[in-house]
Amino acid sequence: MTKTLDHLDPALLATRADAIADAARDLAAFGWTPATSSNFSMRLDDGLAAITISGRDKGRLGRDDIMVVDMDGKAVGSDSRPSAETGLHTQVYKRYPEANVVLHTHSRTQSVASRLFANEGRIRLEGWELQKAISGYTTHESVLEIPVFPNTQHMPELEAQVDAWIDSGKPLYAYLINGHGIYTWGRDMAETRRHLEALEFLLGCELDLRRLSP
Ligand SMILES: CSC[C@@H](O)[C@@H](O)C(=O)COP(=O)(O)O
Ligand SMILES: [Zn+2]
Image 1 (cartoon, helix red, strand yellow):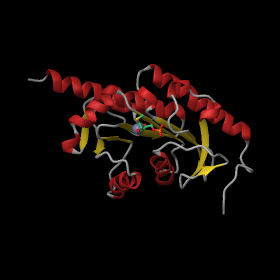
Image 2 (cartoon, rainbow, N blue to C red; image 1 turned 120 degrees about the vertical axis):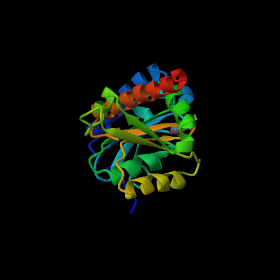
Image 3 (cartoon, rainbow, N blue to C red; image 1 turned 90 degrees about the vertical axis):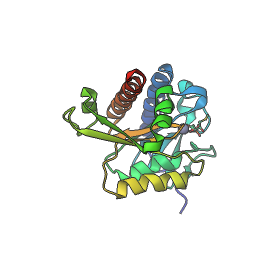
Image 4 (cartoon, helix red, strand yellow; image 1 turned 90 degrees about the horizontal axis):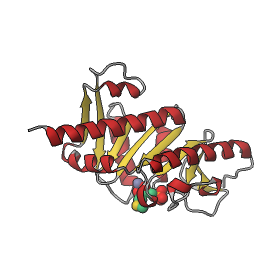
């Protein structure tokens, strides 16, 4: 059955679109969304999410740059093309019912770290106080693993890699895609931004350590 927006409160969509645009403007100002890269979404209900339209300048989003998709990534009530990476967003909503926001950015730090750690397939973070910015982490002594998946333009391949990591029982709070960027999520926009900002900081610290260590 074709889904419609009939049962969706337009005020809810407008609020979510504004929240996405506000966050995107800030992240773009940090320089993390160069050249129309990056994509952002928020869950609307069990079956729908608001997501950025493909190819838009993420630093200048308005309500018209956000559309609705179902959990199969299909456009609902719009002829626009959703983000090319919509499948990675809906995957998070399907795998993590508590997740309501997904943020994907392409910062220089994220991009360089993904290349540097690609051979190891993961970045192991340990000993950093800021790990506690990730929900569920209460001490710098814990180990926070961020996988680095090979990049591909074929989303089902990427989704399969993410599924395999989750199915192996390992915790997943974020992942890098090699030469591409980072995906992270959370219960609300504040938590998700905290995750993203902490990870950006931690990846930068790891890069500095590699640069400075003899
Ligand atoms: C402009 S290059 C980056 C894109 O290929 C992609 O990785 C990206 O993040 C943005 O794609 P989009 O389709 O606008 O959501
Ligand atoms: Zn991307």
